[in-house]
Length: 589
Ligand SMILES: NC(=O)C1=CN([C@@H]2O[C@H](COP(=O)(O)OP(=O)(O)OC[C@H]3O[C@@H](n4cnc5c(N)ncnc54)[C@H](OP(=O)(O)O)[C@@H]3O)[C@@H](O)[C@H]2O)C=CC1
Ligand SMILES: Nc1c(N[C@@H]2O[C@H](COP(=O)(O)O)[C@@H](O)[C@H]2O)[nH]c(=O)[nH]c1=O
Image (tube, rainbow, N blue to C red):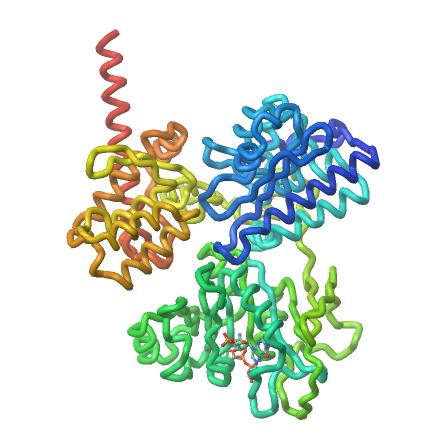
């Protein structure tokens, strides 16, 4: 069983501050950190939401920041930079305990070095390998750390803590229930229909409401519909916001009785996955694959298995835009956490017109599912009613016993001793990912050292480096300037697809070497990354990317795993060097 940092916490040692004014201020700053933490929503793929507000002893906000994307500067580092000298003696407000898994330029070191004397933390990190670590590290550096609900208890604190739970609901669900956070969204008429009896549904809600849906899509890892919705609506399911994050489009179809031509099979704008039952219409599966659509076969197509599968692929949040049949199946499987219902002031009638949720088998009103934390918002002529179907799991007691930790956080299952998988930066060994926030310095063609924000930035840009065309140089500069590794990857890949003439002619033969040199730099200049890599000796390293069959290991081990291989190669080189240097030292003695 994994050791839980701080597992010896005892309520007896907890100092409960109970000053109403101080609480109101602390709660207000925590709420501000919560609001900040959501600012990147829609621009980047969903990630743990971090916000940080630094307030001086006179109660003035001196600096703030938020995590923009996986692999970018931590919120706390940005806030400290914005605050400068005014950090000395100030208080930092964090909605979420930092996930400082990577050691340098971390929230903890930034706050300590800046001279912050107190930190107020909304909730502890829900992922077990990170929980309690930053709080403990800050305390060991002499900061006063007050955690809401532990050190600060009052009604106003409870409300602020709740907003911290809600803003990171996807992360908390990931930690507690091994499924992504799922939102069911539908548009219905005032008489409760999601389409006319004919199945026609365009449109029930107003343009303003549909624009809100595009925003919801941009905040999601994926959009799900059932096969019948594809047949009836031929949807596009894109987030029409220009250049922001584009979610994956997922179709669940048992029969695979899907049209040959459909907007979803055009994967130039967004990718599509069709999930089906093993063996269904194999020829049609091949046809879809030829169009660039990924087909996933599961033994039985039930909503829970599908969600567990997408959890394992690293998805944090999913938007269900299906009809009532699939919605009922998802609700009864217990995988829907939140509902967004757009209600339009229209009546369509129709005894057989579809409704938002099909058969749930309930016979008495007392069995109805009550929504929690219900919100009402008018959007143009429509009313948006939202609420949670299941409460966001509360991680209190925040520092559980080891047994309790295991029960609420099944992700702690220890790795197989011989295989270490890595993918998302916030997971264990996430620092091995090319999206990890470790800038590298690499020589250019004139041997001048240039700093790149991440290995991914460098790798993507090298596709166009040295090509004798100003447009190729523009590609390099554009990728270099991207704010996050995710965006660098998106731009690099799309430029490669759209302007293959700008890609260097030797790219295919050079790309492994480019990656090797970038990784060698990363694991040489960061001692803690070097130690982490060496600590995996004896294990097989696999990049658990289901999409990338060259650098990643694929869904079922069918990928070539070149990233894992290069890391293992580097590991043995570093181990060789350290044994040589030990030998040298010994011989010198
Ligand atoms: N107003 C709104 O917000 C919306 C309206 N609609 C409307 O709803 C209607 C379609 O609704 P509906 O028929 O419910 O369609 P759905 O497509 O949402 O759901 C049913 C289909 O999902 C697939 N499926 C996969 N797994 C399961 C499972 N475990 N349980 C149940 N179904 C599963 C099946 O596809 P297969 O048959 O291929 O095996 C099934 O036919 C259309 O008229 C559409 O216009 C749809 C979405 C939103
Ligand atoms: N009819 C209806 C909705 N329908 C949903 O939107 C999908 C179409 O998306 P797209 O093709 O991307 O515009 C459709 O398949 C269904 O899931 N949504 C709404 O907000 N309001 C509406 O009135």
